[in-house]
Image 1: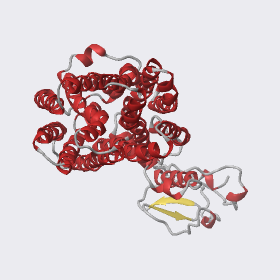
Image 2: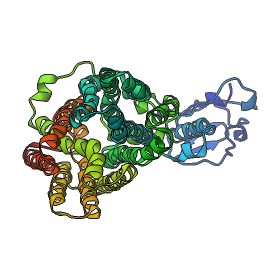
Image 3: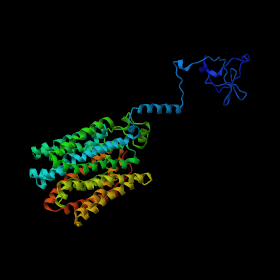
Image 4: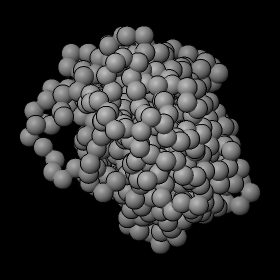
Length: 518
C-alpha cells in the first residue's frame, strides 16, 4: 500500500496485543511531515495516536517513494479557494488574447456605446431631410402642405414597426432586430434622391420604408439595455444612448449644408446612408443580445449584471390584457404623445423656422439648429447622472422619475412661450436651446420608466408608448404645415405648450417607478 491508504477515523479502538513495538514508518514521503504531530493527532512510529488515551485507526504501513509527476492519477482537493484561484487563472488565460481596452473597459458600456452610435446614425439620416427639403422644395416647386406630407411620410412606416419591433426584440433578441433596422434605414436613405426624381409617390414610399427601419431601433435598444445595464446605471446609460441621437442631429444639421453647397442635395443622402455599413460590421462582431450569450464577458462583470438585472428568457407570449389594465402604462402612453408632439416639430421644422422667421440662409439655419441639439446632448447626461445619484442615495425611483419628467415638460413649455416676446435672433436661439435642454431630462423620466415597471416586456412597452409618440409626429408634423399655411408660428408653439401641460398632470397623477408587471 502507498500513503494514499492512510485513513483517519473518529472510531476509537485499541491496538491488538501482538502489535509490533516498532516499525519503520517514514513520514518524510507523506507531504514532507516529520514524526512531530500537529493538532489533536501525533504520529508515532507506525501508529496514529490521539493526545488522549483513546486510539483511532492503526495501520502497519511501510512507506514507499511516490513520485506524483510519474503518476497518471491526479490528486483532487475539494478546496473552494483553490478552485476559485484556478478559475481566475483560466479566465485570465481566456482574456490574455484580448486587447487591453477590452479587458479593462466594461463590456456593458461597449454595448451602450454601440447603441448610442446607432442612434447617432439614426438621427443623421432623419434630420438631413429637414435641411435638404429647402433646395428640394425649390427645385420641385413643392408647397408647405406638400413639404409637411413629405416630412410626415417617414412616420407612416415608423408607426408600423413600433409594437412589432418590441415583440420581435423581446422574443428573438435585440441584436438581430437593431442590426436589421440600421441596414434597412441606411438603404432607404441612399435611395431617397432616386425616389425624389421619380416622383412624389416614390418619395413617400421610400421615406415610409426608412421609418420602418428606424421604428424597430428604440424597442430593440430598450430590450438590450434592460438585460445588460444594472438599475443603478440605467439613467446614465439611456442618457448616453439618447445623447447619441442628439449628436446625430448636430452632425446632420452641421454637415448637410456643407455637402449641399459643394456637391448638391443628393450627396447628403448618399454619404450618410453609406455609414451604416461600417456600424453593422462592428455590431455583428462585438454585440450580443444578452450577457449570457457573450463568451468574452468577464465573470466579475457577468455576476454584477445578472445580480442587478432581471434575468430574462425570451418572451413567448405577451400579456396584453394585463399590460393595458395598468394606469402607469397609460400614463406612459399619454405622456409620450404629449412629449413627442413638441419634440418632432422641433426636429423637422426648426431649420425652416430659422430660415423664414429669423432670416438665416441655408448654411446659417443648419448651423444654428445645431445649438439646441448640442444642448440636449449635454443636458441628457447631466440629468442621467443626477437621477442615478438620487437613486443611489435612497430616493425612490418613482419620485426621481416624476421630478425628471416634470422638468422635461415644464421647461420646454416655459421657454416656448417666451419665443413670441423676443425680438432678436440670438434670444430666439437661446430660448430654443433652453427649451431643448430641459426637454432632455425626459430621458431620465418617461424614457427610463419602461424598464422600471415591466423589465421583461420593456421592448413591447416602449413600442406601445412610442406608437403614441409616433402618432404625435405624424399629426404634429403634418398639422404644422397646415397651421403655417393658415396661421403663424405662435399658433404652432401654443399647441405644443398645451400638450406639455397635459402631460405634466397625467404623469404626476398616474406614473410609478415600481415594477408592476413581472
